[in-house]
Amino acid sequence: MTQQDTYGPFEVDQQIVAKCRYYVGQIGGRFYELLGKERKITGVRCETCDKVYWPPRSTCGRCFSMLGEKDLVVIGPEGTLETFTRIAYEEPVHPKKGPLIYGVIRLDGAGSGMAHLIGGVDYDALKIGMRMRPVFNRDPKGTMLDIDHFEPVG
Ligand SMILES: [Zn+2]
Image: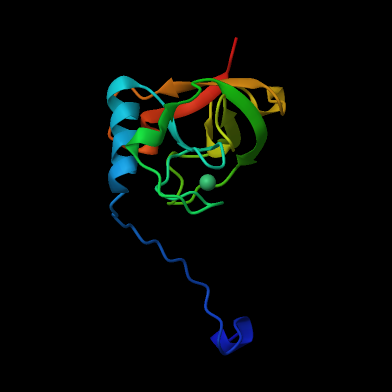
């Protein structure tokens, strides 16, 4: 079998891994500082729309108002599990070795949920609507993984 029998003329199986570094912005920097040093999870509230974004962002996605540190609000730390899935395979983009459970957790006071790792529980025991709490990393590094994972409350 030749390569042409296996692949079409313009198809190549390839995996691209791109490691990058970017500036998180002033509000993002404050978010990671509060998360790592004070173990506080913050969102940013648009006063016009009364929507709280988590993680914080510098522009409201609805009305395009500029948001800043004055708009930061402490949210959570507990929240509600909105959905979840199990990842059985390993990929370089995953922050930990699999199998993994990812969930979308809407923290109390946040206007939307955000995906993060779930741990300390069997997949089959998870239920949408469960109350979740963060487990903070003992060695914060200024990343979203300063929250190591979320686990069920109680
Ligand atoms: Zn707004």
